[in-house]
Amino acid sequence: MKVFVAGGAGYIGSVCTEYLLDKGYDVTVFDGLITGHRQAVDPRAKFIYGNLEDRDFLFKCLCEGRYDAVMHFAAFSLVGESMKDPGKYFKNNLGNAINLADAAVKGGVKRFVFSSTAATFGIPEEMPIRETTAQKPINPYGESKLCFEKALRWYSDIHGLKYAALRYFNAAGASENYGEDHNPESHLIPILLQVAAGKRAKAMLFGDDYDTPDGTCIRDYIHVLDLAQAHEKALYAPESGHYNLGTGAGLSVKQILEAARKVTGHPIPADVVPRRPGDPPRLIACSDKARRELGWKPQYEDAETIIASVWKWMQKHPDGYEF
Ligand code: UDP
Image (cartoon, rainbow, N blue to C red; front, top):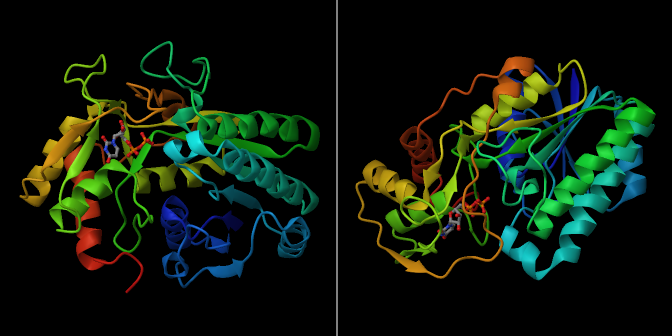
């Protein structure tokens, strides 16, 4: 099967690319290297340098390549930034994604796997969050992803483009070769490990006055290799659909801090600072649908295993991909 991976030089895209190649797929990565890294692209993949804004080039690529499936990872994903610059998020995460969906249709692609997010739910009305839980995003990042989920439904109905919208909860972890290298880094686990590695003096905990047992936000951390497994399974989903991907275990910011201290043996000093705007207090997935319909089985369910994989990757890549 030939797979076109938009955003394959980014964190989750690079791990999925490696996973698909290991399984024998023919993979082409398309990436503008805005936040991604050329070194993060598995050398076995073909690489096309391009921007999703360039509709004509995208159409040319998709029409010439005769791909069976498109996976779309190329998006901006920072909640805080989206609260300051919503236009940036709608332009790329919705507008440019439409370019990709149009090009997929034009190129005769039959399958589309989309990186969606738990942020489409906002402050959910039930916990754990099911596929049927009402989606009311509280930040432009989540709204931009929800808009594209909704658009895909019409591409499926009208053009027969079968899609899976995979709503990641908190992607974390690394494979042996590929991991997370954002600049600036904003995610909790890599920041804590940067402190342990001596690259930051201390960490900041954004708010300890939430209505949760220890006052810090609760998230469902899911290993990036488990997300990769879901992407591969989604290529065979019988119908278009949405899937929540998490372990079902909620861990607080303080629990993650403790796990990071245990894995690294470093005290990781941390100060509590005010809440970060746009952060819901609690996000935990119910992933029964993905397990049942896709046959998805997460392999890395505990926080220490996930954090240890990141720590190992950081030892091998102390300066990220800039070696
Ligand atoms: N967080 C924190 N300090 C940081 C980064 C994140 O306390 O330096 C908190 C953040 O408020 C959220 C959780 O950690 O409650 C996970 O945040 P992250 O940015 O990793 O992922 P998100 O949930 O925003 O996708």
